[in-house]
Length: 255
Image 1: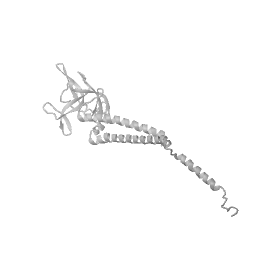
Image 2: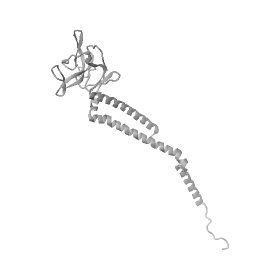
Image 3: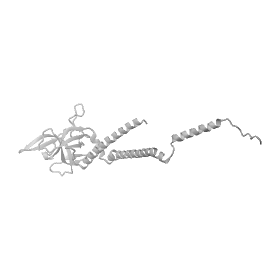
């Protein structure tokens, strides 16, 4: 293979490996965060995998609206400690729920929650109670608002309006044992093997170069080219001798 083409392919491979490592690291961090239920953030922003259809919005022709947030999306939110929020803000908060079938239902005041999940809903109303603001939240795709009003301290982050379609499905898959093996462990293993092969090849090339430049002169051994030239010269001399006329083995005079 042409050395120039080989170098280009090596550079492309290096770029692919670096991009994969960046992607794998980001997916791993998000996946582990989602798995433990903690809200992590980087520089004040958090990425949330959407698993509910409560914020989905569709156009009249059935296509997805830009105003919606869909199952499988990654929603980018800004961590918040604001004292007040506005109607129309889409906010992230924790919600105590009970499980009914395959869905989680918000607890009312008479129920004991089974677990707590993170929810992104829109603020649809601000309720003033003696100068203290409560926030009524509702999903864009739900018929009724959430049961419980929220206070500012309940709100964890505010949706920035940026979402990455479909990436959430990949993160959900990575959280499974099979997904973690295929998407994280196996590619990293392949990367380690590739790098090990490169190290071995470079070591062999280094040893070969060292022997070529230092080994031959110090041991007095002839190179293959020198051996070939000597053999050719010997064959020419032998052919020249065979071509000379023979004088025979005539007996000397007097015998």
